[in-house]
Image (cartoon, rainbow, N blue to C red):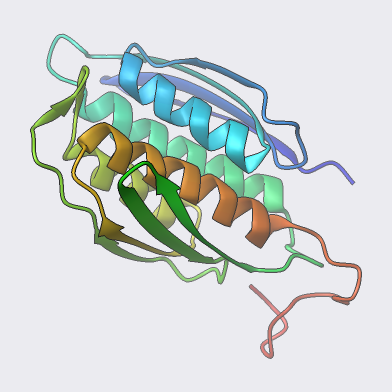
Length: 195
């Protein structure tokens, strides 16, 4: 069973194509025009073991906001599409991930009900060419377009680069766990019979 998806979205602000293979090997081809964001998406794919291709042409002459938020929307749609009917998936995933002094916890429920809880605190306004406030906007967009319950908490950290990198890697590991097929699960893992 192939669990791959490709989603395209074009607006006056961005032109984005995302392709994901949930059963990949961590290969990433990322080009959003925002170097630090590319680095974060590469870490997400590599540590989640997803094959991920992202191409974004955005209005970076304005700022990075539309490119990052809209990439989150399209990535969430691609994840949801690749999951299909969600039969046999573990549904839940979590990870407490250390990155030097930073420690970030992520927990996911692929419930079909979007909810987002976020508690990351940054010291500065930017990591490279990415506004640190866009970390929240990205994960909010992914969680709602993928219809997932996503909690992200910072347990420790001082260096903004480490905090954000821990968040993206933790998200990748948690999502990998939640999307895994478990042969013991017959049908949908829900008392409702649907996710």
